[in-house]
Length: 173
Image 1 (tube, rainbow, N blue to C red):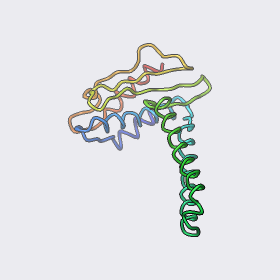
Image 2 (image 1 turned 90 degrees about the vertical axis):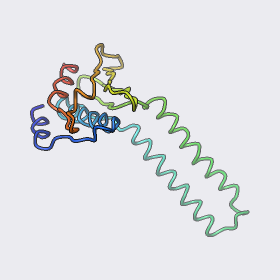
Image 3 (image 1 turned 120 degrees about the vertical axis):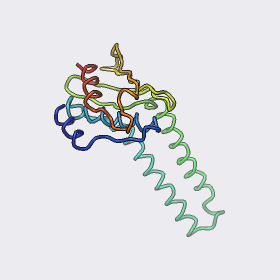
Image 4 (image 1 turned 45 degrees about the horizontal axis):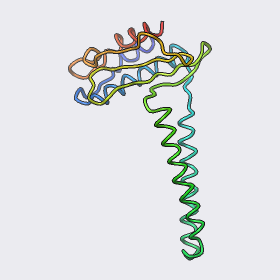
């Protein structure tokens, strides 16, 4: 934790104090860095991989549509276009459903030798509290993290990273 504190002593995290969402995102980023460097967690990339796969398939659908429109008459490829568009919309719809149900509020999901962890952040844009619910091996840890944003940042928008990391370390102790 000393290496992270030393790094942010040299280059502190500055945010616009009037944008609560940006303040919470900066806290999320510092939390992820702490979990990776100090606790040795590897981040799961499942949802990112799903997005990339659907994106690549969408590009292939767009290339097929473009190729057919340049080389064939519309009447000739109309049925193929319906299939391509159906694939495109159904895959994107399924991805959106999966992300909304399984990864809507996820700040971090990972694993290390001790087990798996998932951290959900229930941070509404207008709420001035930074709230986290932590699940270890699928079970919620009692005493979740909740802190006022105004206690974490000073009036100029600099994050008090030492206090934040100390309190996060207490939760994961």
